[in-house]
Length: 310
Image (cartoon, rainbow, N blue to C red; front, side):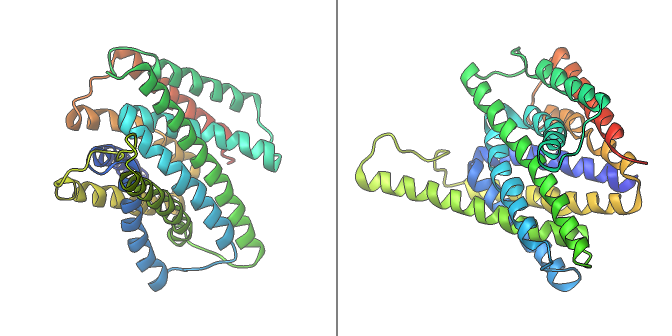
């Protein structure tokens, strides 16, 4: 139970620190460097205590490219546009039904009527929380872009989870075994590669635009000489809280506590984010958005309990 609660707190802290880091570093750069921090820590574990390679490495690598790579790139762009609370609500709540849908289409895993009902509850709650109102002072265009990035991040996380399950099957069929932290390391390599390529492309585009005199080329965020001095600690906190400590506590929780207890607790991450954003970002969510968040989280918990086998 303790590990599950720690996972929820670390994931929430990762969301809030990630949103604040984007204000100084830009979404793409903040995501890349926080993945580098997590890769270093996970790599030390994998090469000393755990496993740096496995029979399912290729599948885990692809899973990381989609989940940690494309998914987290979209996640940080969502942070930049609609903040950590709504972005993490989208990702945490929609990843579960997206994963269930992918398993159904790809692996033939059937959905029960109760699971489909819970998915509808999730969508209804998210829709209520995202409905335009005074809790978010952004234009409709920015809101729409943030929602799209959140949807991409949610599907990236869901598809990455399905691929991870496939990797575990490959590893089991080969007669090997792997611990969760080593699997996270093998996944995050793909994330760093994808994020690094996107960051390099972004930087080269800016440099090329300046050399050719293109007027419409600009940095993702304005260049600020103090951005590293003011943003480096947020990047480290984000890397520690999310991919490193968060994932480690998550695997610890799954190892010692039944899945049916762990997943509903972790699903409450969007609710834990609310007081954090209220204190650190000064965001005042409306009653309607809070009710929508509670409904969506309840749907995720119901979907989890309806999916987990005793």
